[in-house]
Length: 375
Ligand SMILES: Cc1cc2nc3c(=O)[nH]c(=O)nc-3n(C[C@H](O)[C@H](O)[C@H](O)COP(=O)(O)OP(=O)(O)OC[C@H]3O[C@@H](n4cnc5c(N)ncnc54)[C@H](O)[C@@H]3O)c2cc1C
Image (cartoon, rainbow, N blue to C red; front, side, top):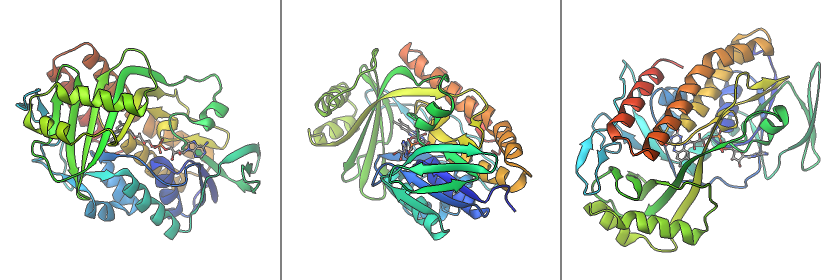
């Protein structure tokens, strides 16, 4: 018997839907409230132990069928110069017996598979609504939703991302997200394949690409922008065009020829936050980006959110009380997640300092070795 019977999950992104699936599988009745009406986003790479966490959620096989597979000979993480010459194969990744293949998946596809699985397990997902007010007593949390509905829960999970309102309510004096000095650009290009997958470094910034099975090319990029900026769609397009113009590599020239002002581009500043432990107060716990968001240099933020969800359900299933479950969760999660945030931010700083790429690869390899240990 789990130590709680009911849970409200605030936020139906990667962390929240993973938590709903994981908790439902150990017998907790879950409701999810999500502000957005439909999932959006680009692609996401899920590597290390994360495929095993997805397998525990029961969704790995379904995802594998619709994903790009990053097997041992993938060139998707290779490091190239601006002409396209390969400088290194990318950071070293540990292997272990029975390791599952890392995958790259279109985020809306990932979120739909998680949501469908949650609903099959009896989870109720409410869209366009959130928790408005809440009051906690000895027996639970009474919540009023923005649509006026009221309900009581044993556990509340704040999975509402880096701008978490739940975090601001629980820890009003806690840290706020910090701008890393770099801007993330992403482009989902519906297109025929382009040769030369990998990461390219040039004078304006870094750009990479890999293919998704849905005839999509995923093209992420990172550019140094000293002051945190809000860019218009036109500014994001111009920056992407300037970035691609700075390369002579055939793949980049080819991508530049396909870039048009109406391209599906996302631009946002890289921000990070690592909330000091504990990430809970009373009956409410923060997971995923709400507790620990980072730059994408390791490509592990979403993976940590999925691991959080799986470990939370394991702790809820095994502990005699909610307080004991929260303690066990923090013991298992804090150091591991700190490694990801601190390494990613350090890699971002090295890039800002124009350090040799090999220094970045060494940092990433050391962190991936730690993440190769079971979660
Ligand atoms: C450019 C970039 C590339 C990345 N690449 C990778 C990668 O390759 N691999 C990887 O593992 N990670 C990657 N990440 C990190 C990853 O995107 C995040 O760690 C992950 O999305 C966190 O999931 P989350 O569910 O905690 O938060 P989010 O994805 O932000 O989801 C939060 C959800 O809560 C909802 N919400 C917000 N406020 C409320 C509210 N008050 N009430 C109800 N709902 C609310 C939002 O609509 C959203 O659906 C990348 C990040 C960036 C910026």
